[in-house]
Length: 508
View 1 (tube, rainbow, N blue to C red):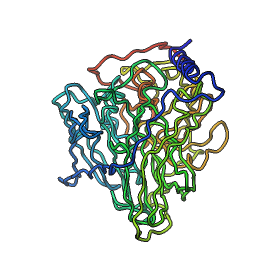
View 2 (cartoon, rainbow, N blue to C red; view 1 turned 180 degrees about the horizontal axis):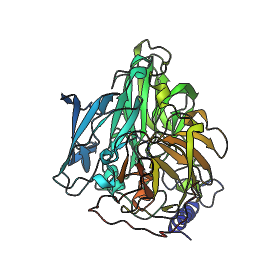
View 3 (tube, rainbow, N blue to C red; view 1 turned 90 degrees about the horizontal axis):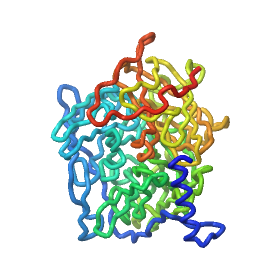
View 4 (cartoon, one colour; view 1 turned 135 degrees about the vertical axis):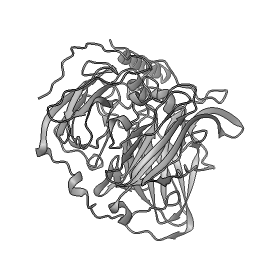
């Protein structure tokens, strides 16, 4: 029996014992209830300068000390500070550059999660920055307005780097978002909400469990933008929450117990129209933008309900039974008016659109234990080759009853179907990461535009970061028509491993 399944069953057995073999077991990963007495920290907007037509940002990965609790000094990592990083913001059509410096004592990288950009600028395992080193990726923003994020992607160490605090948002604007009837004053009625869970030991230090338990470390402390028990003052009738699951393993089911909310955007940008929902499920790496209506003087809390993890084994051992509050919203006695959410299509809508009839290739991907299509990650191996300008369908399936998610670099995809059925409205928008319910086939439509390089690959992988680090990742290159894959760059941190090198991959 696979290590993952063994660990999960063992955890489940322990939980059953603790629950006295009750018919409905409790949780082995429950979250401590917080008092919501701390003002929500808002990551600052990153300063930038325009040099020769390029908007230039600067990020430095560094160590620091953060007081998550008063008087308790916790060792953390951050960008331009002790924990998390500033919010980068740019417009479609702008050329951007980010001057990245590494002040840590080990290599790291910065991956622009959800961004369409050349592979050598992607910030994956092939673009690690050595201690004391620098890196300056530059590219043109050419995709719709969206809530993206950035985080490290060093080979075999992504979980550790994100868990210690290296993460931040990257917001994109375009003509449609600028003209939309949506709250848009950053930090006032347009709020970044980075939700993460941690284990803080008796000495006040972050503890990353390494017991191979599934799906990874599930913390008993939940923080929002690095704030435990956070509240946000609301001064407008509607507030926009840009939700990011920045955790390494836990899946959240976010909503409000006393009201519905309007989902307006998924990972890659605005939906065709608002969707009224009670809650939205977000696996690690997924984002959603929601609009919440408030009344003067009232208080409500963003809540994570028991997460629907699909047919996973012992879901109570995977966080499925956990429910807890995340963020308190406190409305002022008088609220500024705000219109119903509405927007027009971007002038780029037609060029951005994906059409199933254009698909010329269908690929299949099976996630099983720590492998994809029977292979573990090898930084020296190209697993898939796509032609620039081509539209493809990727059929993705998790064959084991464990939580998995699937993230594809460079593209935003559309979910065509889930086990043959149309996706629910909350999964009908542009996506780059999707939670995979076990034994369920997801058909993803994507197009590989603009950037061809036979030697430098992009990644696809599970975004449960322990799974990624353990090898649940593959590489693809985009090439000119008729061109063959080349050789990936040499890699300084570990050679990876290749198991079952002749494993079958079903392409047609």
